[in-house]
Image 1: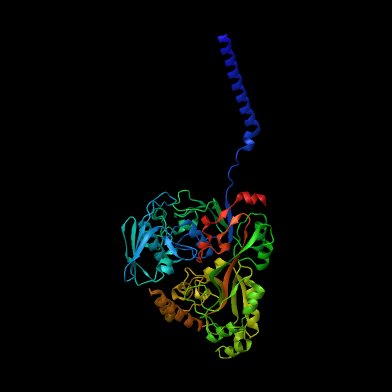
Image 2: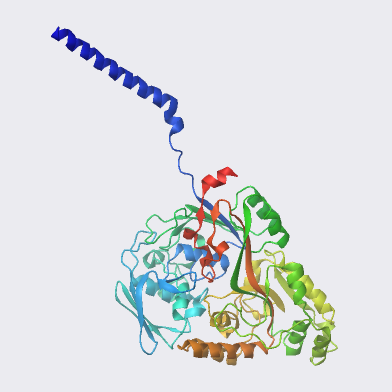
Length: 555
Protein backbone atom coordinates (compact mmCIF):
# COMPACT_ATOMS: atom_id res chain seq x y z
CA UNK A 1 0.00 0.00 0.00
CA UNK A 2 2.82 2.35 0.84
CA UNK A 3 4.46 1.77 -2.58
CA UNK A 4 1.15 2.20 -4.35
CA UNK A 5 0.55 5.52 -2.65
CA UNK A 6 4.06 6.63 -3.60
CA UNK A 7 3.51 5.69 -7.21
CA UNK A 8 0.18 7.52 -7.19
CA UNK A 9 1.85 10.66 -5.83
CA UNK A 10 4.59 10.42 -8.42
CA UNK A 11 2.06 10.10 -11.21
CA UNK A 12 0.15 13.07 -9.83
CA UNK A 13 3.32 15.20 -9.74
CA UNK A 14 4.18 14.25 -13.30
CA UNK A 15 0.67 15.10 -14.45
CA UNK A 16 0.81 18.47 -12.72
CA UNK A 17 4.19 19.23 -14.31
CA UNK A 18 2.89 18.25 -17.73
CA UNK A 19 -0.17 20.45 -17.28
CA UNK A 20 1.98 23.42 -16.22
CA UNK A 21 4.35 22.94 -19.18
CA UNK A 22 1.48 22.61 -21.63
CA UNK A 23 -0.29 25.62 -20.15
CA UNK A 24 2.92 27.65 -20.33
CA UNK A 25 3.51 26.82 -23.97
CA UNK A 26 -0.16 27.46 -24.77
CA UNK A 27 -0.01 30.85 -23.08
CA UNK A 28 3.19 31.75 -24.94
CA UNK A 29 1.69 30.60 -28.25
CA UNK A 30 -1.61 32.38 -27.76
CA UNK A 31 -0.54 35.53 -25.95
CA UNK A 32 3.25 35.79 -25.78
CA UNK A 33 4.46 37.61 -28.91
CA UNK A 34 1.23 39.53 -29.40
CA UNK A 35 0.93 40.78 -25.83
CA UNK A 36 4.53 41.81 -25.17
CA UNK A 37 4.95 45.57 -24.70
CA UNK A 38 5.66 47.23 -28.02
CA UNK A 39 9.14 48.62 -28.57
CA UNK A 40 9.19 52.22 -27.35
CA UNK A 41 8.61 54.56 -30.28
CA UNK A 42 11.28 57.07 -31.10
CA UNK A 43 10.54 60.59 -29.94
CA UNK A 44 11.27 62.49 -33.13
CA UNK A 45 11.12 66.27 -33.42
CA UNK A 46 11.36 68.07 -36.78
CA UNK A 47 11.58 71.85 -37.00
CA UNK A 48 11.97 74.10 -40.04
CA UNK A 49 14.21 77.18 -40.24
CA UNK A 50 15.08 79.74 -42.88
CA UNK A 51 18.44 78.07 -43.46
CA UNK A 52 20.69 75.27 -42.31
CA UNK A 53 22.90 76.27 -39.35
CA UNK A 54 26.53 77.33 -39.53
CA UNK A 55 28.10 74.53 -37.48
CA UNK A 56 31.15 76.34 -36.08
CA UNK A 57 30.43 78.13 -32.76
CA UNK A 58 32.94 80.82 -33.76
CA UNK A 59 31.03 81.51 -36.99
CA UNK A 60 27.26 81.06 -36.54
CA UNK A 61 25.01 83.76 -35.11
CA UNK A 62 21.70 83.65 -37.04
CA UNK A 63 18.57 81.97 -35.70
CA UNK A 64 19.18 78.43 -36.97
CA UNK A 65 22.85 78.57 -35.95
CA UNK A 66 21.98 79.87 -32.48
CA UNK A 67 19.50 77.02 -31.94
CA UNK A 68 22.08 74.47 -33.07
CA UNK A 69 24.79 75.89 -30.81
CA UNK A 70 22.54 76.07 -27.75
CA UNK A 71 21.84 72.35 -28.09
CA UNK A 72 25.25 71.01 -29.09
CA UNK A 73 27.56 73.17 -26.95
CA UNK A 74 27.61 74.09 -23.28
CA UNK A 75 28.11 77.56 -21.81
CA UNK A 76 29.36 78.77 -18.42
CA UNK A 77 25.96 80.18 -17.44
CA UNK A 78 22.36 79.50 -18.47
CA UNK A 79 19.20 81.68 -18.67
CA UNK A 80 15.91 80.88 -16.96
CA UNK A 81 12.57 81.93 -18.50
CA UNK A 82 12.65 85.14 -16.41
CA UNK A 83 16.12 85.83 -17.92
CA UNK A 84 17.87 85.27 -14.60
CA UNK A 85 21.26 83.62 -15.08
CA UNK A 86 22.13 80.45 -13.17
CA UNK A 87 25.23 78.20 -12.98
CA UNK A 88 25.83 75.79 -15.85
CA UNK A 89 29.36 74.61 -16.62
CA UNK A 90 30.45 77.15 -14.02
CA UNK A 91 29.34 76.13 -10.51
CA UNK A 92 29.91 79.65 -9.21
CA UNK A 93 31.76 82.86 -9.98
CA UNK A 94 33.00 86.09 -8.50
CA UNK A 95 34.18 89.46 -9.81
CA UNK A 96 36.86 91.79 -8.54
CA UNK A 97 35.89 95.16 -7.06
CA UNK A 98 37.10 97.00 -10.18
CA UNK A 99 35.04 94.75 -12.45
CA UNK A 100 38.09 93.65 -14.44
CA UNK A 101 38.63 90.07 -13.26
CA UNK A 102 35.97 87.37 -13.29
CA UNK A 103 36.73 84.01 -11.67
CA UNK A 104 34.72 80.92 -12.62
CA UNK A 105 34.89 77.57 -10.82
CA UNK A 106 33.82 74.72 -13.09
CA UNK A 107 31.89 71.52 -12.50
CA UNK A 108 33.94 68.35 -12.55
CA UNK A 109 33.06 65.36 -14.69
CA UNK A 110 31.43 67.09 -17.66
CA UNK A 111 32.13 65.01 -20.77
CA UNK A 112 32.51 66.13 -24.34
CA UNK A 113 30.85 64.04 -27.01
CA UNK A 114 34.33 62.64 -27.69
CA UNK A 115 34.49 61.28 -24.14
CA UNK A 116 37.10 63.79 -22.90
CA UNK A 117 36.45 65.70 -19.70
CA UNK A 118 35.79 69.41 -20.10
CA UNK A 119 38.34 71.58 -18.27
CA UNK A 120 39.19 75.24 -17.86
CA UNK A 121 41.74 74.88 -20.67
CA UNK A 122 38.87 74.16 -23.07
CA UNK A 123 37.08 77.31 -21.92
CA UNK A 124 40.20 79.41 -22.47
CA UNK A 125 40.80 77.82 -25.88
CA UNK A 126 37.18 78.49 -26.92
CA UNK A 127 37.35 82.10 -25.77
CA UNK A 128 40.63 82.73 -27.58
CA UNK A 129 39.40 80.96 -30.71
CA UNK A 130 36.18 82.99 -30.86
CA UNK A 131 37.96 86.31 -30.40
CA UNK A 132 40.77 85.44 -32.83
CA UNK A 133 38.45 84.31 -35.63
CA UNK A 134 36.36 87.40 -34.94
CA UNK A 135 33.10 86.20 -36.50
CA UNK A 136 29.77 85.00 -35.14
CA UNK A 137 29.22 86.31 -31.64
CA UNK A 138 32.79 87.52 -31.19
CA UNK A 139 31.62 91.14 -31.21
CA UNK A 140 30.02 90.60 -27.80
CA UNK A 141 33.32 89.73 -26.13
CA UNK A 142 36.17 90.96 -28.30
CA UNK A 143 35.99 94.65 -27.25
CA UNK A 144 36.18 93.72 -23.58
CA UNK A 145 38.17 90.52 -23.00
CA UNK A 146 41.92 90.81 -22.41
CA UNK A 147 43.39 87.44 -23.33
CA UNK A 148 46.77 88.45 -21.90
CA UNK A 149 45.15 88.84 -18.49
CA UNK A 150 43.13 85.63 -18.73
CA UNK A 151 44.57 82.58 -17.01
CA UNK A 152 43.86 79.01 -15.94
CA UNK A 153 45.07 78.48 -12.34
CA UNK A 154 43.95 74.84 -12.41
CA UNK A 155 41.83 72.42 -14.44
CA UNK A 156 38.59 73.66 -12.92
CA UNK A 157 39.20 77.40 -12.58
CA UNK A 158 39.46 80.14 -15.17
CA UNK A 159 40.06 83.83 -14.52
CA UNK A 160 38.91 86.06 -17.36
CA UNK A 161 40.51 89.48 -17.49
CA UNK A 162 38.73 92.45 -19.07
CA UNK A 163 40.19 95.55 -20.70
CA UNK A 164 37.44 97.62 -19.14
CA UNK A 165 34.34 96.90 -17.05
CA UNK A 166 31.50 95.27 -18.96
CA UNK A 167 28.15 95.49 -17.17
CA UNK A 168 26.33 92.70 -19.09
CA UNK A 169 29.39 90.38 -19.17
CA UNK A 170 27.55 87.34 -17.79
CA UNK A 171 24.87 87.70 -20.47
CA UNK A 172 27.57 87.84 -23.16
CA UNK A 173 28.93 84.52 -21.88
CA UNK A 174 25.73 82.88 -23.12
CA UNK A 175 27.47 83.05 -26.52
CA UNK A 176 30.78 81.52 -25.42
CA UNK A 177 30.19 77.97 -26.59
CA UNK A 178 32.83 75.63 -25.18
CA UNK A 179 34.60 73.39 -27.71
CA UNK A 180 36.71 70.27 -27.19
CA UNK A 181 40.13 71.89 -27.68
CA UNK A 182 42.03 68.64 -28.21
CA UNK A 183 39.56 67.40 -30.83
CA UNK A 184 39.64 70.70 -32.71
CA UNK A 185 43.46 70.74 -32.67
CA UNK A 186 43.47 67.31 -34.32
CA UNK A 187 41.70 68.79 -37.35
CA UNK A 188 43.66 71.98 -37.87
CA UNK A 189 44.99 72.67 -41.35
CA UNK A 190 46.86 75.61 -42.83
CA UNK A 191 45.19 78.95 -42.36
CA UNK A 192 45.51 82.55 -41.22
CA UNK A 193 45.84 82.01 -37.47
CA UNK A 194 49.54 81.21 -37.09
CA UNK A 195 50.29 77.94 -35.35
CA UNK A 196 46.55 77.32 -35.10
CA UNK A 197 46.22 77.33 -38.88
CA UNK A 198 42.50 77.58 -39.64
CA UNK A 199 41.61 76.79 -36.00
CA UNK A 200 39.69 73.72 -37.21
CA UNK A 201 37.09 75.90 -38.89
CA UNK A 202 36.83 73.91 -42.12
CA UNK A 203 36.46 70.67 -40.20
CA UNK A 204 33.68 71.97 -37.96
CA UNK A 205 31.87 73.58 -40.89
CA UNK A 206 32.08 70.33 -42.86
CA UNK A 207 29.61 68.63 -40.52
CA UNK A 208 31.74 65.54 -40.08
CA UNK A 209 31.42 65.83 -36.32
CA UNK A 210 30.85 68.38 -33.58
CA UNK A 211 33.17 69.33 -30.71
CA UNK A 212 30.60 69.98 -28.01
CA UNK A 213 29.41 68.66 -24.66
CA UNK A 214 25.77 69.74 -24.93
CA UNK A 215 22.61 67.65 -24.56
CA UNK A 216 22.52 66.81 -28.28
CA UNK A 217 25.23 65.79 -30.70
CA UNK A 218 25.54 66.04 -34.45
CA UNK A 219 24.42 62.89 -36.25
CA UNK A 220 24.11 63.98 -39.89
CA UNK A 221 24.66 67.12 -41.92
CA UNK A 222 23.15 67.51 -45.38
CA UNK A 223 24.55 70.70 -46.83
CA UNK A 224 21.79 73.13 -47.69
CA UNK A 225 19.10 70.69 -46.54
CA UNK A 226 19.14 69.63 -42.91
CA UNK A 227 21.01 68.88 -39.70
CA UNK A 228 20.13 65.86 -37.56
CA UNK A 229 20.89 65.74 -33.84
CA UNK A 230 20.63 62.85 -31.38
CA UNK A 231 20.63 62.81 -27.60
CA UNK A 232 24.02 62.59 -25.90
CA UNK A 233 23.74 59.65 -23.50
CA UNK A 234 26.48 60.95 -21.18
CA UNK A 235 25.15 64.47 -20.81
CA UNK A 236 25.67 65.79 -17.28
CA UNK A 237 22.43 67.78 -17.11
CA UNK A 238 18.73 67.00 -17.21
CA UNK A 239 16.09 66.41 -19.88
CA UNK A 240 12.32 66.64 -19.73
CA UNK A 241 10.71 63.21 -19.41
CA UNK A 242 9.72 63.00 -23.07
CA UNK A 243 12.49 65.07 -24.63
CA UNK A 244 13.24 64.18 -28.26
CA UNK A 245 15.59 61.29 -29.00
CA UNK A 246 16.31 62.75 -32.41
CA UNK A 247 15.87 66.23 -33.86
CA UNK A 248 15.93 67.21 -37.52
CA UNK A 249 16.48 70.89 -38.33
CA UNK A 250 15.17 71.49 -41.85
CA UNK A 251 16.48 74.43 -43.85
CA UNK A 252 13.37 75.41 -45.79
CA UNK A 253 10.51 77.88 -45.49
CA UNK A 254 8.75 77.08 -48.78
CA UNK A 255 5.07 77.49 -47.84
CA UNK A 256 3.51 74.62 -49.78
CA UNK A 257 6.23 72.25 -48.57
CA UNK A 258 5.78 73.30 -44.96
CA UNK A 259 2.01 72.98 -45.13
CA UNK A 260 2.26 69.50 -46.67
CA UNK A 261 4.76 68.33 -44.05
CA UNK A 262 2.57 69.61 -41.21
CA UNK A 263 -0.58 68.02 -42.64
CA UNK A 264 1.19 64.67 -43.04
CA UNK A 265 2.67 64.87 -39.49
CA UNK A 266 6.18 64.94 -40.94
CA UNK A 267 6.98 68.26 -39.28
CA UNK A 268 6.36 69.12 -35.64
CA UNK A 269 7.14 72.85 -35.52
CA UNK A 270 7.30 75.28 -38.43
CA UNK A 271 9.68 78.14 -38.98
CA UNK A 272 8.55 81.63 -38.00
CA UNK A 273 8.62 82.96 -41.56
CA UNK A 274 5.41 81.49 -42.94
CA UNK A 275 2.84 83.73 -44.70
CA UNK A 276 -0.20 84.55 -42.60
CA UNK A 277 -2.52 82.64 -44.91
CA UNK A 278 -0.35 79.54 -44.59
CA UNK A 279 -0.31 79.76 -40.80
CA UNK A 280 -4.08 80.15 -40.66
CA UNK A 281 -4.58 77.22 -43.02
CA UNK A 282 -2.31 74.99 -40.94
CA UNK A 283 -4.12 76.03 -37.74
CA UNK A 284 -7.26 74.40 -39.17
CA UNK A 285 -5.56 70.99 -39.34
CA UNK A 286 -6.66 68.66 -36.56
CA UNK A 287 -4.21 68.81 -33.65
CA UNK A 288 -2.30 71.83 -34.98
CA UNK A 289 -2.22 75.19 -33.18
CA UNK A 290 -0.36 78.48 -33.48
CA UNK A 291 2.32 79.43 -31.00
CA UNK A 292 2.65 83.21 -30.47
CA UNK A 293 5.67 84.49 -28.60
CA UNK A 294 6.71 88.11 -28.11
CA UNK A 295 10.46 88.30 -28.47
CA UNK A 296 13.13 91.02 -28.49
CA UNK A 297 13.38 91.05 -32.28
CA UNK A 298 12.87 94.09 -34.44
CA UNK A 299 12.14 94.22 -38.16
CA UNK A 300 14.16 96.98 -39.80
CA UNK A 301 14.34 98.42 -43.25
CA UNK A 302 18.08 98.99 -43.05
CA UNK A 303 19.04 102.06 -45.05
CA UNK A 304 22.53 102.40 -46.49
CA UNK A 305 23.71 105.73 -45.08
CA UNK A 306 26.69 105.94 -47.44
CA UNK A 307 25.11 105.26 -50.84
CA UNK A 308 23.45 108.05 -52.89
CA UNK A 309 20.72 109.13 -52.47
CA UNK A 310 20.16 107.52 -49.06
CA UNK A 311 23.36 109.08 -47.75
CA UNK A 312 21.24 112.23 -47.34
CA UNK A 313 19.38 112.42 -44.01
CA UNK A 314 16.50 114.27 -45.65
CA UNK A 315 15.93 111.35 -48.03
CA UNK A 316 16.01 108.90 -45.15
CA UNK A 317 13.58 110.98 -43.10
CA UNK A 318 11.28 111.38 -46.11
CA UNK A 319 11.15 107.61 -46.56
CA UNK A 320 10.32 107.13 -42.88
CA UNK A 321 7.48 109.65 -43.23
CA UNK A 322 6.15 108.15 -46.47
CA UNK A 323 5.93 104.55 -45.23
CA UNK A 324 2.48 103.20 -44.34
CA UNK A 325 3.03 101.52 -40.96
CA UNK A 326 -0.66 100.83 -40.41
CA UNK A 327 -0.95 98.88 -43.65
CA UNK A 328 2.27 96.98 -42.89
CA UNK A 329 0.56 95.51 -39.84
CA UNK A 330 -3.12 95.30 -40.74
CA UNK A 331 -2.70 94.13 -44.34
CA UNK A 332 0.53 92.12 -44.13
CA UNK A 333 1.40 90.97 -40.61
CA UNK A 334 -1.50 91.40 -38.16
CA UNK A 335 0.32 89.37 -35.51
CA UNK A 336 3.17 91.89 -35.29
CA UNK A 337 3.44 94.94 -33.01
CA UNK A 338 4.34 98.41 -34.22
CA UNK A 339 7.98 99.38 -33.59
CA UNK A 340 8.57 102.94 -32.50
CA UNK A 341 12.19 103.10 -31.50
CA UNK A 342 15.72 101.96 -32.15
CA UNK A 343 15.39 98.76 -30.06
CA UNK A 344 12.43 96.57 -29.02
CA UNK A 345 10.34 97.80 -26.11
CA UNK A 346 10.78 94.48 -24.26
CA UNK A 347 14.43 95.31 -23.50
CA UNK A 348 15.58 96.87 -20.27
CA UNK A 349 16.61 100.46 -21.00
CA UNK A 350 14.25 100.97 -23.95
CA UNK A 351 13.52 104.57 -24.97
CA UNK A 352 10.38 105.53 -26.91
CA UNK A 353 10.41 108.78 -28.92
CA UNK A 354 7.99 111.43 -27.66
CA UNK A 355 6.61 111.88 -31.18
CA UNK A 356 5.60 108.87 -33.23
CA UNK A 357 6.58 108.72 -36.89
CA UNK A 358 3.43 108.17 -38.94
CA UNK A 359 2.70 108.28 -42.64
CA UNK A 360 2.63 111.91 -43.81
CA UNK A 361 3.11 112.38 -47.55
CA UNK A 362 3.17 116.19 -47.38
CA UNK A 363 5.90 116.22 -44.73
CA UNK A 364 7.84 113.56 -46.68
CA UNK A 365 7.89 115.69 -49.84
CA UNK A 366 9.00 118.72 -47.83
CA UNK A 367 11.96 116.69 -46.56
CA UNK A 368 12.88 115.67 -50.11
CA UNK A 369 12.90 119.32 -51.12
CA UNK A 370 15.65 119.89 -48.53
CA UNK A 371 17.77 117.14 -50.07
CA UNK A 372 20.78 117.83 -52.28
CA UNK A 373 19.28 115.34 -54.75
CA UNK A 374 16.04 117.26 -55.25
CA UNK A 375 15.15 117.38 -58.93
CA UNK A 376 17.49 114.51 -59.79
CA UNK A 377 15.88 111.50 -58.14
CA UNK A 378 15.29 109.88 -61.53
CA UNK A 379 19.07 109.37 -61.66
CA UNK A 380 19.11 107.51 -58.34
CA UNK A 381 16.86 104.44 -58.32
CA UNK A 382 16.72 102.83 -54.86
CA UNK A 383 17.50 99.12 -54.74
CA UNK A 384 15.47 97.25 -52.10
CA UNK A 385 16.29 93.63 -51.20
CA UNK A 386 13.96 91.21 -49.45
CA UNK A 387 14.96 87.77 -48.15
CA UNK A 388 13.78 85.03 -50.52
CA UNK A 389 13.26 82.47 -47.73
CA UNK A 390 10.69 84.75 -46.07
CA UNK A 391 7.94 85.10 -48.72
CA UNK A 392 5.79 87.69 -46.92
CA UNK A 393 8.72 90.14 -46.97
CA UNK A 394 7.94 90.69 -50.64
CA UNK A 395 4.64 92.27 -49.63
CA UNK A 396 6.47 94.72 -47.37
CA UNK A 397 8.83 95.50 -50.25
CA UNK A 398 5.96 96.17 -52.64
CA UNK A 399 4.22 98.36 -50.05
CA UNK A 400 7.45 100.34 -49.65
CA UNK A 401 7.79 100.69 -53.42
CA UNK A 402 4.22 101.98 -53.71
CA UNK A 403 4.70 104.44 -50.83
CA UNK A 404 8.00 105.78 -52.17
CA UNK A 405 6.73 106.25 -55.69
CA UNK A 406 3.99 108.44 -54.21
CA UNK A 407 6.70 110.96 -53.25
CA UNK A 408 8.69 110.64 -56.48
CA UNK A 409 11.30 108.00 -55.59
CA UNK A 410 11.97 105.05 -57.89
CA UNK A 411 12.36 101.69 -56.15
CA UNK A 412 13.68 98.45 -57.66
CA UNK A 413 12.56 95.43 -55.62
CA UNK A 414 14.98 92.49 -55.66
CA UNK A 415 14.45 88.98 -54.24
CA UNK A 416 17.70 87.73 -52.63
CA UNK A 417 18.52 84.36 -51.03
CA UNK A 418 19.62 84.72 -47.42
CA UNK A 419 23.17 83.48 -47.90
CA UNK A 420 23.58 85.92 -50.79
CA UNK A 421 22.39 88.73 -48.51
CA UNK A 422 24.94 87.75 -45.87
CA UNK A 423 27.73 87.66 -48.43
CA UNK A 424 26.80 90.94 -50.12
CA UNK A 425 26.47 92.90 -46.88
CA UNK A 426 30.08 92.10 -46.05
CA UNK A 427 31.15 94.89 -48.42
CA UNK A 428 29.91 98.46 -48.78
CA UNK A 429 30.19 98.33 -52.57
CA UNK A 430 27.91 95.28 -52.85
CA UNK A 431 25.35 96.40 -50.24
CA UNK A 432 21.98 97.69 -51.52
CA UNK A 433 20.22 100.90 -50.56
CA UNK A 434 17.77 98.99 -48.39
CA UNK A 435 17.44 95.45 -47.06
CA UNK A 436 14.68 94.21 -44.78
CA UNK A 437 15.93 92.09 -41.88
CA UNK A 438 14.92 90.91 -38.44
CA UNK A 439 17.57 91.31 -35.77
CA UNK A 440 17.34 89.78 -32.30
CA UNK A 441 18.86 90.90 -29.02
CA UNK A 442 21.47 88.57 -27.57
CA UNK A 443 20.58 89.45 -24.00
CA UNK A 444 17.62 91.31 -22.47
CA UNK A 445 19.14 94.79 -22.24
CA UNK A 446 18.96 97.61 -24.80
CA UNK A 447 22.75 97.49 -25.02
CA UNK A 448 22.57 94.14 -26.76
CA UNK A 449 20.57 95.45 -29.70
CA UNK A 450 22.56 98.69 -29.80
CA UNK A 451 25.79 96.72 -30.04
CA UNK A 452 24.33 94.24 -32.54
CA UNK A 453 23.11 96.92 -34.86
CA UNK A 454 24.98 100.19 -34.62
CA UNK A 455 28.61 99.72 -33.56
CA UNK A 456 31.18 100.29 -36.29
CA UNK A 457 32.60 96.85 -35.53
CA UNK A 458 29.35 95.27 -36.78
CA UNK A 459 29.79 96.77 -40.25
CA UNK A 460 30.34 94.05 -42.78
CA UNK A 461 27.83 91.70 -41.14
CA UNK A 462 24.19 91.09 -42.04
CA UNK A 463 23.13 93.00 -38.92
CA UNK A 464 24.10 96.43 -40.26
CA UNK A 465 23.41 97.63 -43.76
CA UNK A 466 23.53 101.24 -42.55
CA UNK A 467 27.35 101.46 -42.67
CA UNK A 468 27.23 104.24 -40.07
CA UNK A 469 30.92 104.30 -39.12
CA UNK A 470 30.09 106.89 -36.46
CA UNK A 471 32.67 107.24 -33.68
CA UNK A 472 30.20 109.10 -31.47
CA UNK A 473 27.76 106.18 -31.64
CA UNK A 474 30.61 103.84 -30.72
CA UNK A 475 31.50 106.08 -27.78
CA UNK A 476 27.92 106.21 -26.51
CA UNK A 477 27.28 102.47 -26.77
CA UNK A 478 30.64 101.37 -25.41
CA UNK A 479 30.35 103.88 -22.59
CA UNK A 480 27.03 102.38 -21.59
CA UNK A 481 28.28 98.80 -21.79
CA UNK A 482 31.29 99.67 -19.62
CA UNK A 483 29.07 100.97 -16.83
CA UNK A 484 28.60 98.51 -13.97
CA UNK A 485 25.78 100.34 -12.20
CA UNK A 486 22.53 99.26 -13.84
CA UNK A 487 20.63 102.54 -13.47
CA UNK A 488 23.53 104.57 -14.84
CA UNK A 489 23.87 102.08 -17.69
CA UNK A 490 20.21 102.45 -18.59
CA UNK A 491 20.50 106.23 -18.76
CA UNK A 492 23.39 105.87 -21.18
CA UNK A 493 21.38 103.43 -23.29
CA UNK A 494 18.67 106.10 -23.58
CA UNK A 495 21.20 108.74 -24.68
CA UNK A 496 22.55 106.42 -27.38
CA UNK A 497 19.05 105.65 -28.69
CA UNK A 498 18.13 109.31 -28.91
CA UNK A 499 21.22 110.14 -30.93
CA UNK A 500 20.76 107.20 -33.32
CA UNK A 501 17.05 107.85 -33.80
CA UNK A 502 17.69 111.44 -34.93
CA UNK A 503 19.92 110.17 -37.75
CA UNK A 504 16.96 108.32 -39.29
CA UNK A 505 19.31 105.46 -40.17
CA UNK A 506 16.56 102.85 -40.57
CA UNK A 507 12.81 102.47 -40.80
CA UNK A 508 11.50 100.77 -37.65
CA UNK A 509 8.59 98.58 -38.71
CA UNK A 510 7.76 95.66 -36.41
CA UNK A 511 8.47 94.42 -32.95
CA UNK A 512 8.35 90.76 -33.68
CA UNK A 513 5.82 88.26 -32.43
CA UNK A 514 7.08 84.83 -33.42
CA UNK A 515 4.20 82.79 -34.82
CA UNK A 516 4.69 79.13 -35.61
CA UNK A 517 2.32 76.29 -36.38
CA UNK A 518 3.00 73.21 -34.27
CA UNK A 519 1.58 69.78 -33.54
CA UNK A 520 -0.01 70.78 -30.24
CA UNK A 521 -1.79 67.45 -29.77
CA UNK A 522 1.41 65.45 -29.38
CA UNK A 523 4.11 68.11 -28.76
CA UNK A 524 4.55 70.08 -25.53
CA UNK A 525 6.26 73.27 -26.75
CA UNK A 526 7.19 75.60 -23.82
CA UNK A 527 7.49 78.61 -26.16
CA UNK A 528 3.76 78.34 -26.89
CA UNK A 529 3.17 79.17 -23.22
CA UNK A 530 5.78 81.93 -23.15
CA UNK A 531 7.79 79.82 -20.72
CA UNK A 532 11.22 80.36 -22.30
CA UNK A 533 14.07 82.89 -22.05
CA UNK A 534 13.76 85.85 -24.44
CA UNK A 535 17.18 85.16 -25.90
CA UNK A 536 17.71 83.97 -29.47
CA UNK A 537 18.11 80.20 -29.69
CA UNK A 538 17.17 79.35 -26.13
CA UNK A 539 13.47 79.02 -26.92
CA UNK A 540 14.55 75.88 -28.77
CA UNK A 541 16.56 74.12 -26.09
CA UNK A 542 15.29 70.78 -27.37
CA UNK A 543 15.66 68.94 -24.07
CA UNK A 544 12.70 70.89 -22.64
CA UNK A 545 10.38 70.19 -25.58
CA UNK A 546 8.36 66.97 -25.17
CA UNK A 547 7.11 64.62 -27.88
CA UNK A 548 4.41 61.96 -27.32
CA UNK A 549 4.47 59.37 -30.16
CA UNK A 550 1.49 57.47 -28.73
CA UNK A 551 -0.69 60.56 -29.00
CA UNK A 552 0.54 61.15 -32.53
CA UNK A 553 -0.65 57.65 -33.45
CA UNK A 554 -4.17 58.64 -32.36
CA UNK A 555 -4.47 61.33 -35.03
